Image (cartoon, rainbow, N blue to C red):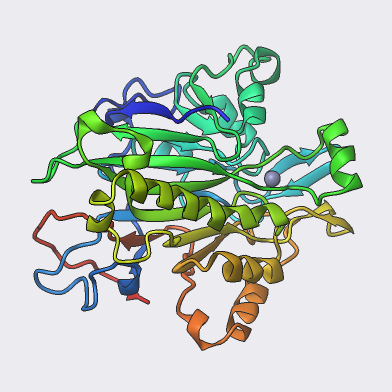
Length: 402
Ligand SMILES: [Zn+2]
């Protein structure tokens, strides 16, 4: 496993996401959400309504575009996940003899996106990184993905065939490897701690283990996937940015296109080990932000859909979690909140969201308020523990609280 890597990102000096844009100012500067959601219990301090009076406003967000495409934002840093901007009626190629039709439009088109800092790609599959995106994206744009995806994206033969050229800023993370994003130019609070976002590759299996996996490895039919931990965290100071000193203020787990497999049991173990190491190295810092449980997952963004190939006419092999596996994963990882994505955009998704809702209802009372359902174009706002900044707050319209 390679040591933690570091990337320095300055949101005030972005480069354009698209080749046709001369500067990031050519993009709309904001993305309007049709509705915003908040969740008081997802923070350590918000026991009262977070939107009232002088209460702290949420300072981070996830915006749902469609399929597994979201924008995660904190401290001015914007991460675009699994960019897929095809429209209803368009087709993707998902392996030899496997095509799927998109059934829903994304909430916005590529040219309507605000300036972005980084693309986080779970795997190189056309419903996560489609041909339109591949053609339009700036070749110097920063992409973080799997070693397999890096091999494809940086290959002239694979993506440069039409004179498009290979991507030049792709960073790969293998399972449990990590990358720290340093947010240059961000405001520091009175304690001089600095915000960082740590991305850690999590295990995932896109095909069931066993002979099928062996055959797939040989054929290269279904690409390998990562899951991700995205930790919005604090460092004691800019000069002291060492991985074990990082104090997570909010932890997002993104499943990627995985099935519910034994490897996922490593995730809670990994988080526990990481935090135990952090507490040993730096006991004081790690008591300031966490409210007791510094190993919890605050938000799980889970890829569901029960993707079945070759397709509905011949449902042979399921390659992403269905509703039942989704709730199994909730029980395993016990996230404070779960947000389903990747459930109705393509014709090969055979496990609809209503099945997941039924499974969640059957889990019992204590789980029912711990799932957040975003429609395309809606946004979830949340607060990062340790954000001490006080700001005046104007009321958000159409806010749904969980
Ligand atoms: Zn996939």
